Amino acid sequence: MPEPIAYTALEKGAPVTTSGGERLGTVEHVLQDASLDLFDGLAVRTHHGLRFVDANQVTSITTDGVATSIDESEVEALPAPEGDAVLEADPEQYQGEGLTAWWGRTFKRSHWLREKE
Image (cartoon, rainbow, N blue to C red; front, side, top):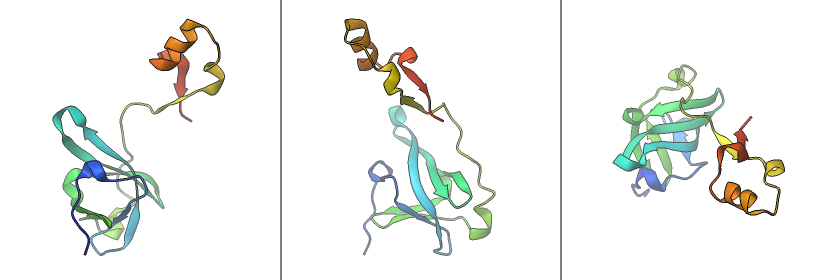
């Protein structure tokens, strides 16, 4: 029997199902406001691309995955997630042996990062 878990325990790749039990997709990442311990929803990888599932559409989160109130016919119309740009390290810019390079890498200064494509 699947056990309920907190949204903070969800892992990337966990299955997400529709109200009818069909596979909607997999968890890409959890959207939250950590300072308020507030669950906002999920970014879900579907066969229609990355989609946003709002917290009020999630009916349960268990060790088996996420169940939603979304019908299979509604999946394509789900919105894409919105938010700040996703950044990743640019290894070509992470070069240098000096103190400035070390500080840039350590504190992820903006000129040491580029937008993820």
